[in-house]
Image (cartoon, rainbow, N blue to C red):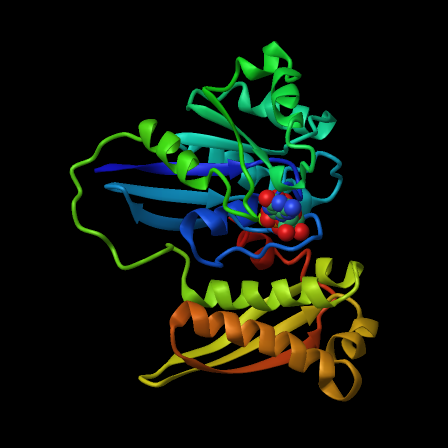
Length: 292
Ligand SMILES: Nc1nc2c(ncn2[C@@H]2O[C@H](COP(=O)(O)OP(=O)(O)OP(=O)(O)O)[C@@H](O)[C@H]2O)c(=O)[nH]1
Ligand SMILES: [Mg+2]
């Protein structure tokens, strides 16, 4: 069997998490229209074609940084490259800007095989653009990569071809048995992520960036999983927005999270979410340490 780590890296918002979910066929990683959605390195395991693919989704690499928090996100994303047998560098199909170039500077020093993935080709209404776009990539950049492939994560276009290409670069191992796990992260992690994803989707721009979710109880019984979680907010004034009129926003967030948790666990879920004001979460050492 072939097996190895494949890291998915790139600047924010190019579709890394969407591709990650598409590759493993499960909604594991939060993916939204807002940049800097992903905070953690997330692994997802796929057994297919006599191959064990261990995909790593990473936070968008953002070099406009002054804050500790962003620095930690970047460190996590970049460190994933060094644990990888293959690196997938994702860009928007028709764009290669300064932010992408900074990622390229970091990739340069890594020995692993590299694949440049041009995502979102479904947006290319004039299909003839693609050959031109490919030939416009400067030779100095294209020569860094072992393969270049245009895809659409949204429409699953060229995803099977991408998996086959990746397989060619993965080492062979003796292992024959398949583990049951689809990730090394515990279920609690995904519960917190679905709640955070719902917040990013339903709340206006600045609030989701300054909140943090913790799972306080996870009782897995035969027919029902009972879960309690808390959303911690950095500003007191955000409390009434997150709860909403007569609790309507919290109901919406809970419903979105519960439906996704039920799909993941394949079980009925009872989910209770609390909302609290905690101005210190972003600087707390525990919190920062959880981002590895
Ligand atoms: N049209 C189109 N949109 C896509 C495609 N892939 C991703 N998107 C959209 O791009 C946006 C960003 O997607 P994400 O998967 O969250 O991007 P990301 O790179 O993980 O972002 P960060 O975690 O913030 O770095 C979302 O609105 C996606 O729906 C694609 O193939 N086609
Ligand atoms: Mg992401």
